[in-house]
Length: 273
Ligand code: PAF
Image (cartoon, rainbow, N blue to C red; front, side, top):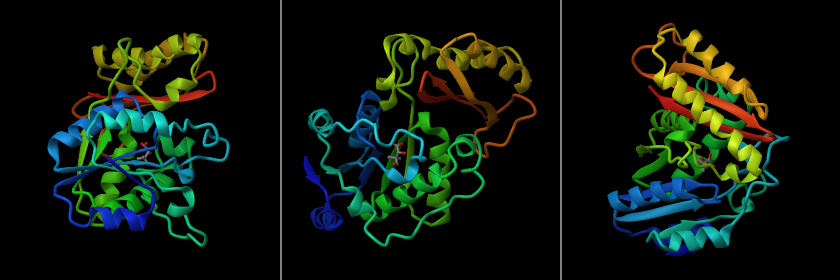
């Protein structure tokens, strides 16, 4: 496992690697969810790369960029066990040198759900993912289903700019009580950690509901979440899983997604139905 911090060194080290080559992009603070992506990437590719970069451009001014967990030593220890070939862990100035002026805007899909609460978030995600793809030049990109909207933004970017990467979306990994694994779960105190199961409970309610009208399902989900005193809803959406357009009837390919604050911690989750 080779840890590389500059673009020039990365290009030099990977010029003649065996392909296909995978990229699993992360912001570090790795957990079993990341490891499941990395293991799948390992199984399906000759060479595997993990990037670790806490991308300032995808955080809003009042968001948690400053306190986002940075745990390089822990991450490298965890990655040692996976057999990954290269870690690309650049500095902020390596990715955004002085004079940096180019940003990628994926219209429409970026403006819904997460985008309406986090205005420049997907601009930051699309820009950094485009840069990572251009530096690393992987054949396959491994992403987790928990970031459903991010995945659609990246797929659109990949198609629109003819980047030619195969995108592999892997299932969300959950704690035994249903909470989706997330680096932000470590912000939760024990009481909040218990309350956080309400996200998954609300998604189960949607999955198991016999109702076909999205407004009815949404109402039931909101009532359940609001019964949890530590929870505050940003959004609960039942939308077409490809376009994120609102659904009239609950049939076919629906994405049920939500963003909920538990105390000061904003969590997202979703299920495909
Ligand atoms: O999902 C994440 O961890 C980040 O948004 C990503 C894709 C690594 C871009 O910074």
